[in-house]
Image (cartoon, rainbow, N blue to C red; front, top):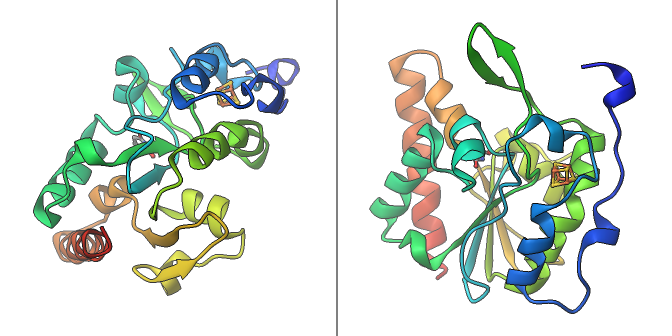
Length: 211
Ligand code: URA
Ligand code: SF4
């Protein structure tokens, strides 16, 4: 991408004030506040009811999510579904979203490889996440991976040190940070992967107990 095409404006002016979740979602569909709108197929907004007691926040949509227009429907989403199911949480009862709403990727052969969002992209997109938080006001907020944890709990938050702990926050919610399901799937070797899977599943059970 040419540098001239890279820009980071805040989505803030696009968020309809005093509007419900459906109207906010509709506005987000046309967001072009940062350059990522050109890269992704569509805005992948959060999914779920504004009455949800728990909100799960990932990093950004992946390849499958970008095409479907829904969060966590690819391989990471399948693992999340399994962990929720095992914890006795109905996916239909929770709100699932991402810090960044467009898929950032680079080509590798004929595949689209996920690229981590940078600080400018995260800041541009933040007003959408804040709007979701304000409207859902979840009792429990779950950060899936370090990007979400650092966006919501501060840049110095260490996931490896505080995974699976509930911390109080200004979002009128108990916040828990856990592993990102995609990171669990990427763990090298069966032993590490199995341990990470167990930790991820255990954290979902901690969440279930708060609901
Ligand atoms: N990874 C994420 O962080 N979010 C998704 O929606 C899918 C994969
Ligand atoms: Fe807007 Fe976020 Fe998409 Fe950037 S990534 S264009 S801020 S919705």
